[in-house]
Length: 307
Image 1 (cartoon, helix red, strand yellow):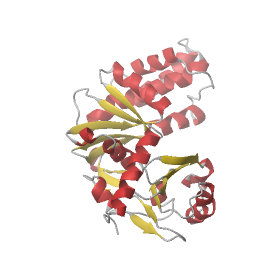
Image 2 (cartoon, one colour):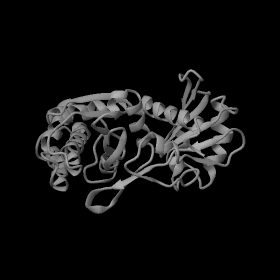
Image 3 (cartoon, rainbow, N blue to C red):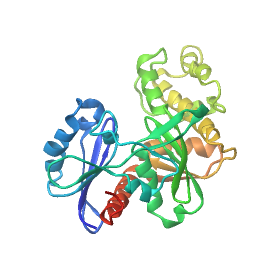
């Protein structure tokens, strides 16, 4: 495999790696100022060429990008691929975009049928999910349940090496909006494990969330919850409701093993919530999964799987 530049380009951040021809990451960097939500229309290509490539010393390397670079907010709109989809079909749909120098390709997102017949979409998480599969051949056999915690958490069913179905929970965004801009505004304070656990317990089976949310306020004003712990309680309530309800929306009726793929600190919170509900959990680094997915797609592209 030839050396290449890999980028996971999200809404609020861009993570980049230079990968050597032995498949190992030689350099890694983050560009928080280049999250697509911070860019003007048409700016992504210019910033990639003038800022990302030089900073990574990768002017002469081919590049592969996943995430929001392929959205209406990013570099170019790359059509979604309909599930079920695996690495080879995704590699066959990589889009080459115009840029000076070596080839730059963007990974498509994935689309599936979601709740109440509405479509579900993802950009970036598909690369992490398929990268997680690529890291261990045994994961490509049978059915696995993945959870990708984040601003818009994804719960994904992968089966025989393909993404089959998934649902999204806006837990991270809800947490941020509620604690900053609602009557549930929470003071900044250290993480409180007891308050988080109380939030998990108060989430019940995830039903009536709009009613349960008001307990953040009532526990502070009348129930003895320290205002500095309200954020931890709110976090537990939202994550608890998500882990209780999202698997059911995927048709899963029994608590089963869940692979958490994402940021370590956030995965630790989800592990606590899932363990309380009887699920066996494994944790996996999201950066490593993204890089594994981009590397696998680059290898397939070199073999001629994409145009």
